[in-house]
Length: 183
Ligand code: NI
Image 1 (cartoon, rainbow, N blue to C red):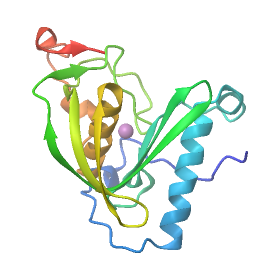
Image 2: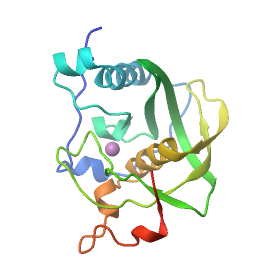
Image 3: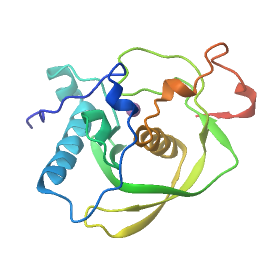
């Protein structure tokens, strides 16, 4: 596998703060190619052979805005078994409903645009129902939970110009810890 040539913006790039726009269908050839490149990149970043060879930081999600393109598209690649992956290509997502229950990732969230460790709690809904469009423009509904719910919220935040570090209390990074469940 060849590593796709994509350039991921870092947290200091103001483009990441842009609000992404609704995507019209059909998708352009370029957008389809970019979606495939992102799938390949995220997949390779989670396979030892490739992350060692290319010195990649493992990541499971990327939004178009992280490549400088303000469109409401993100991709999540979930390892469901040893080197077996499930892809989510999510276009124009809307949160339809969510749980009251909040969770947070105990070891902290990561982001391919943030090249440092950041400690602290990022409150996320434990479960959500999302409406979105697939690659062909067809409306779909998906229910997500636990780590995938966190990943969806992290990526939806990117579409609004929000980074996970924005959600950590600066003075007290572990504020309200007892009110949420650690995953
Ligand atoms: Ni991110």
